[in-house]
Amino acid sequence: MDQSIDVADCLHRWKAGDEGAAEQLILHLHPVISRIVRTHLPRRDHEDDLIQEILMKTFSRLHQYKADAPLTHWVSRLAVTTCLDRLRAQKIRPELRCADLTPEETDIFDRAELENHTRDAADVIQARDLVDKLLSTLPVEDRRLILMVDLEGRSLEEISHSTGWGISKIKMRLFRIRGQLRKTMDKLEKRT
Amino acid sequence: MNEPENTRWHNLIALSAPTFTGDDAPPYGFVTSTMARLREETRQVELAERIGMRALFASLALLFITAMVTLGLQYHDRSDLEPGLRGIVQVENVQLS
Image (cartoon, rainbow over the protein chains, first blue to last red):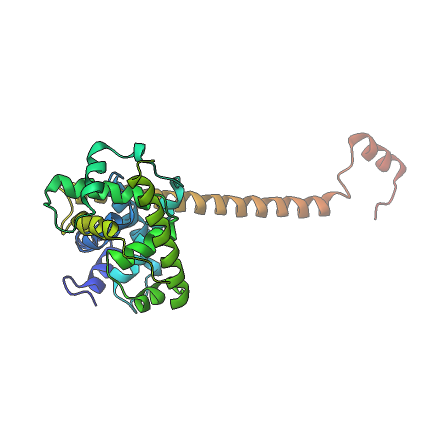
């Protein structure tokens, strides 16, 4: 059960037409959806529109929600699916060239080789844009997998549970993704 | 299967990590605009349901009327002759079954 609000009560009130309950649910679900959208989609995408779209889907499908798991879990799955669908609709760039990077991104790329360099807010944004560009060369499922491991620090067992893939399949896939990322970054390093 | 560590990639991910975290609260006006959209979508769904129900009832009514007319015609066809033909039947006193 979610702790911050009484979800069951809110759902009951919403079904009875209480708009205040819907507002409470929006406030409750926004942080969860916001985190998923930020993780899955490039920074420049219109995240508020997508969060709103996910909330609309949530409300239109609330009758399908069985209270056997927390509402946030159910909404998370819906949000991830929506994000992946959005990513699939975007064109995958098979190759990233040095010319595709801005001078700031090139600078960040060069400095990222060093472990402890100074960080400011602009660096963080440039690094994110560069990561988005690198991720855009990967298929949607690979992008999700590498982020689950390297960003969210999830274990292989957890990933296996959430994706339904076997551990060996995940390892093989990670190996291939890392190889592809390394190849792309080597090309960028050689300024090709 | 051990690939050498891709330090640059890991540093980039670590550096950009704050941009992947979500907001704790929605931006100003978000709830209001979401509620407005929710109201509008609920209205559209209700409207579509009403139109659907009306179309269903209209179809059923049309089906009923068609069935009634067909049955009625079937029972009245025997006496429903053209005026000329009816005249011949009357003059000749033909028995119609």
